[in-house]
Length: 431
Image 1 (tube, helix red, strand yellow):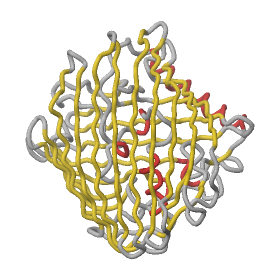
Image 2 (cartoon, rainbow, N blue to C red):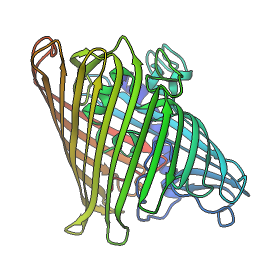
Image 3 (tube, rainbow, N blue to C red):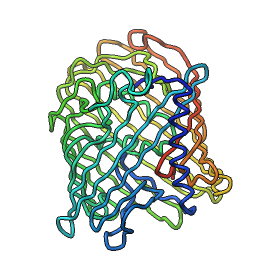
Image 4 (cartoon, rainbow, N blue to C red):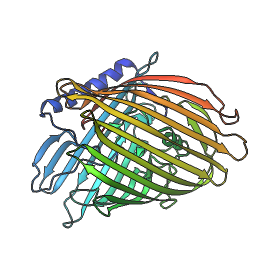
């Protein structure tokens, strides 16, 4: 989605308000070791059992503001990401707020919950003054679902109905507030041109088969729902399954290895073009028809380990999709390395990253395929004394394209650069 523009004065005013809120929250906390990132945009840190939880309002840096009343719990969070584009007005890439309502448990093993998350940038809220051209409505919802889940750990068991991130991609299910790069992988973002993955409407279930193995199943629409211009709500139009395996999870040694495989079949895609776009600004450069039934396979791996006493993470994901009617197909993925250079309360913490993306797109009616590459590098810096609630982001991307003009209609190499400021009510962590 193209970022929405706003005046620099308005952007800084809103960011200043958020900095004030996050700064007040940080001042009330003592520095502590960061928790592991959550695996879903709408998933919170592990909650305490009701008997041990502090009653009333409190602030938890890994979750947000929490209200506890006996066995009822409300957790609310929010974050904003302001991007500075050289030569253009500043604009918000994300401006989100969400909450999870954990209702009193039905039994020792089940609790109902309601979750929502909205993003004001989805409807031009900051365009032409506050309120935007499209106001606020269904298209702002990134997540909106009801669930039955394990009372203390939804990762062990959860069944939900509503709008949530599709289960297929690991990159898609990393928290948006903790991304190392501005956008996710090229192959994933470009699937958005056919309204696949991202947030979708339907039913999802996940169950921990052991302490190392997680099974996820989904019956969704996968052609775009609440936040799509033309929403679809056909539950079961997409059937998907994913297995995630974590053979190593040593918190004391700073080592974790996770692997995943997934498959999805989405039917009845019509009037869509799979579009290639640049890594940061997401400028379209070409595409092919993508219609019919889509069959997708996915594989991912991530390994976190210490290097010279500092955390490092190597991760990769590959996705391949074939469209039956247009007889087109696309494959691609990314490899990324992150390394923590230092991490102290007085100096803040600095992570450097390098990411390589590759996409190959073709269709039976054109002899040659199009190839897209992007090299992204930069750093994320959590500011000193901010308890990882405010950070500075710098990113450079080099985009290259090759292939027939019938696919790559705007072929050119391009350099992109952005400076970003992130403020959140949840700590920004990368490992």
